[in-house]
Length: 308
Image 1 (cartoon, rainbow, N blue to C red):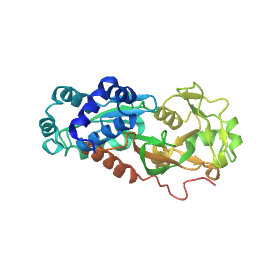
Image 2 (image 1 turned 180 degrees about the vertical axis):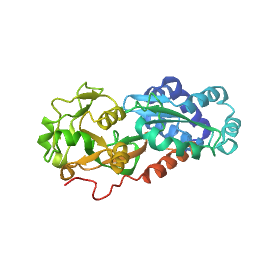
Image 3 (image 1 turned 90 degrees about the vertical axis):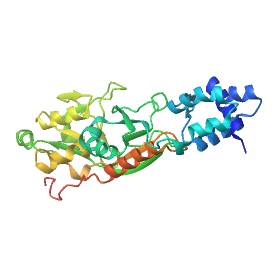
């Protein structure tokens, strides 16, 4: 078993080199010894010291602070661990960095999450709102929310809801242009489109049996989901919207759902942690709160919401 002094020597060497293989060469040990030593130290502290990915490692915020102390205290291990023992610190003090699509946070999560975190005055959130995937290593992300497949199978992810997609329009627009009965009829009607910021192309619409449709002549193209919903609500065109955005307007009758038989399979909504290993209490309480909030999200619609 690696003792505390050995763990600290391994950690300070790896922190200085930012590479486990280089640290192993400097200490004359195998890379597996470095990995096991870092894992043991993380378990001892109850904190993640390095963000890991296929390209290398990077110190976490806690790792940077701990390294500053460890470099000067390697000869006084017992005193160092006494100062950093989690039992002597507030378990919920610190920053939790989180990424999520803005439409989920603004409309659904912020109020209830803020109420919950009022019980933990030492905890602060650093929110990175984007519909794009975050660089979880460089941004040191602790928690994320995302619809669709999880990007990395090493992440700890929990499916909290299945989210439908609706083709929707205002009753006024349908009265003017007619109600489509088949998917191919959408090509002749005014539509909206959502731009993929990475490729510069519009996202295709999803339908059952894996069918895709890219509206050939959208009247409005936007790169923001909430802006596309606003365009559909204005009567500018027919759009395909996430159930998270569309459900309130479908319930109120401001929008009409179309082509029920052609709806695609719902997408999973995940709450995920990109870093395995020990989970600080502050991260766990935010993660569990998000799971509770989103798992109780009501996306149900009356059975008669779809036109015949």
